[in-house]
Amino acid sequence: MKNKLINILKNIIPLIVFLVKTIFEIIKSKRFRYILAFLVWSYLIFWFASTYYLQSPIKNIEFQCVVCKRGTKIAKVENKPQINEIKRDIEVSKEAVEEKNDPLEKIYQQTRHFESNSGNNPTPEATHNYCKSIGKVNEIGYFPNGDRKFCFEDEKEQKLTFFRWLEKRINEGHNIAESMCYYVTGFYQPQCTRSLDMGL
Image 1: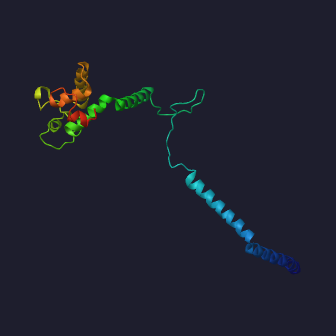
Image 2: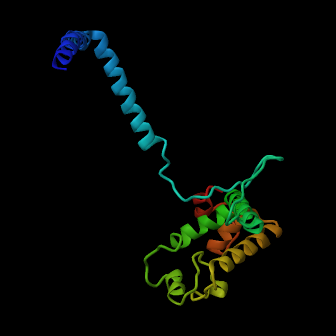
Image 3: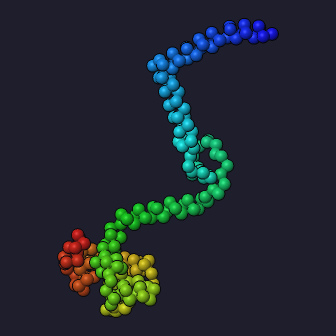
């Protein structure tokens, strides 16, 4: 039995020595280093991609299809927005764009700026500050019959009143520059400081 083991070891030892020498030679070769570097970098790139890049940081979000092509199958979505809500959002956006491009809106905002610095003039006795103190507004210097304590209920009423006032002057045959001069001075003039400041 011992003789058999000794014979086996005698045959295996040269093989082991040969394998060890071969491994050392491979390790010393440049080709092995390139292969090893390639394998290590491949592993690192795969690990990084699977850990950080491929995993979305956004979780528990249900994406909703608002506009889909005809014939496309849509997965079941919970908490789907109501059609009325979408229409309302579109109408609000459309109204905001139209308002921004409206020349009368520009005149209104300029008037607010010149009369009260858009409601930010700190002068305590200013009408807009008085109105603000009682929960109302008058940022446009609108004083019917010279009443400097006149206030609007809200900004919507203020804007509507200004638009109606200006529209009335235009319908009477005056242009915007003349109307704004009348608004400030009480006299219709082709030009005045206010109209020039407004670029009219």
